[in-house]
Length: 222
Image: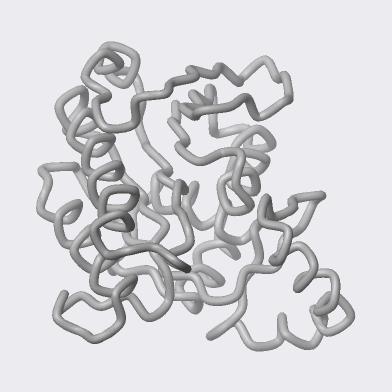
């Protein structure tokens, strides 16, 4: 399986990247980002870009990908809805439309979040925009698309958040991680998200909306 990853320098994406590099079923990993992931591996190839609203120049690069793991995202804190939609909906759809044009037989996995509003009409801004993004991706003619909605994600294997306040929060919470992991309905790990993505890309799944329980179930089979 050849995979592409967006957002591999973030906490979720870097965890997914590590699992892909460790998995024998993944032959190659194409990372698309603004900055380098800062590692080398025989499987790994990077494409650095500044324009994240037009990926048509990369369609030939995407044609050989069997799956795309889209882990790119930003916090909505302090942002207007228009600005957040541009960095969430517009960027995701720019990548997804280029991917499906390159290879409609591809599996597309999008990292959304617990609480996403599929109706697009709720009162919470980020949840509406995420819901719009999910619905638009699901409408594209991929072989299959899966919306990952993790709750709290515990970083493992040296994975760290790029956001300072999150790093502080995780450091303060770390003594409670063993207890929190007993509640898979609300808590998952960066490792489990990566394993679950690989699993759905390899064998599919009955549900298109992947909740924390589904992530745990899929990760256990991968």
